[in-house]
Image (cartoon, rainbow, N blue to C red; front, side, top):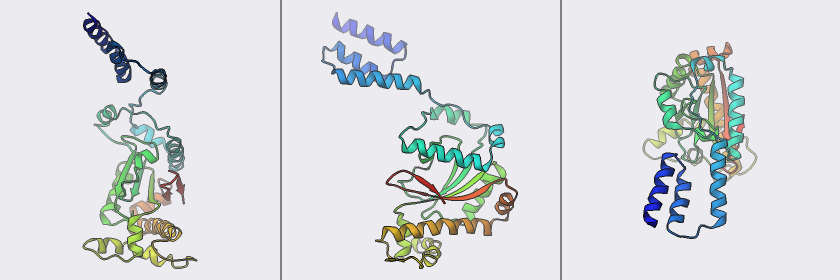
Length: 262
């Protein structure tokens, strides 16, 4: 009889789409286990929070993208980073958003980021499906392929901002400082070495073990990449001159989660 009642309760709650947390609590009750009061309270708090924070399902539309200015995009990225630092990321239904974006995409910005796995670009700015184009390469430099990708993102797809995003404790920067030579990594680091050369005015130990020097080189590398974008892409340079886009740099701090716009 007890088992039958338990099944009836479970079926009833499944019909009304009660959360998995509630099902675990109910199941435990049916099995005559003791549910700790603090666990029940925590579960109730979770349910309330979910009710107060509905999932976002919409993606940016072409009209919404058109009305954005580059400064507005930067402001929204900063606001998103503040939410990220406060562990207050927007709840999103990614499956629904992917389906909603099937017919087109209208991202706000193109972000050129490092390959580093500790740099979750969308999360850092509290953005989701359809919000950002992200190009990644160790050391966040640009070559012909990335320049073409940025031009596509801005000229063809309407993004308003090009953001070069470097970060704290970058392994590619350290390897460039150490002049590492290994396979294709050698040619890759050659793209970053000019930033090391322009950082020789640093007052202090100029080694990869000095965190301050690594940060100084990383920030110079961001600025160097911005210069390369402007120098190598007449399309983007013209768009920036007309105010259609901005090309900016930012530095992500792993310790705090903060993004510093340069």
